[in-house]
Length: 144
Image (cartoon, rainbow, N blue to C red; front, side, top):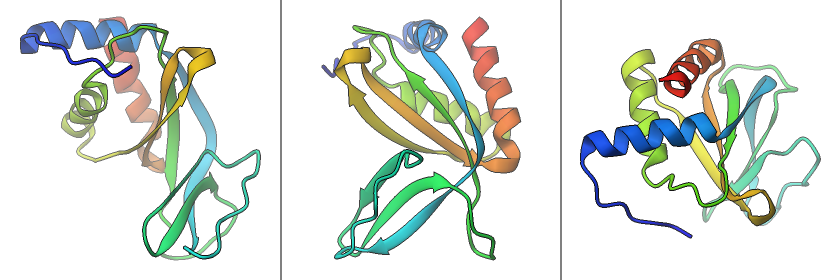
């Protein structure tokens, strides 16, 4: 269930540092990319597929990079599973702001839900050459 917290900025910071410390963090091996296909040709779902989204014109599937070529954006991926009943409202904006301030880069986030594991989970993507630095920022936030 999505919750709305009425709190000061300091209270939000404290709460979200507690949430990130409690979340299960996984750093996914390899380099990842989005493969696109036309809207009338949904992609195959495989064990390697982390996420699939679409707009009116195309499908986009997040998978390990297997092809080479110019114009293919390369991402490092990490994910969080949040514990049941954790108030993680505002987490995406909070962590994205920290990563932008520390690394100078934006991120993408794909969220899902698995009620048997506590509910919401997030896959985070950043430029693959910044993954180690992003994880350093995340680990620093998890220990304070």
